[in-house]
Image (cartoon, rainbow, N blue to C red; front, side):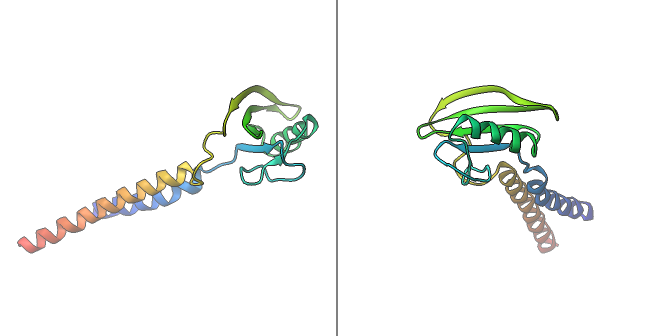
Length: 143
């Protein structure tokens, strides 16, 4: 029984560590309707209203700070997806560009996948712990 409790405690601890370990940077946003500033998030995109600003975002932000990533350039009714690949300090460039209608993927609810997975793992560990407690109460009641 002590082994099961230890396993349940370790499972709960692992479930709590999943969101912090997995949530990393790499997807960035810039908007053609923003003229200055931004932080590169969906709610506060970088400004890329012309080609000069777009190239500045790629060179000064994505390549220099983050060493590559995915950039979604937002237009009023569509978006352009850029894959920025970092090969070396002197060689970081856009390796693919695709145009799509509508909104970028994963721009719905603001809960990251690692948090959903961690929550499900925590729920599962809680159900296992509840089952162990119920089983223990039944065993002591029958004795």
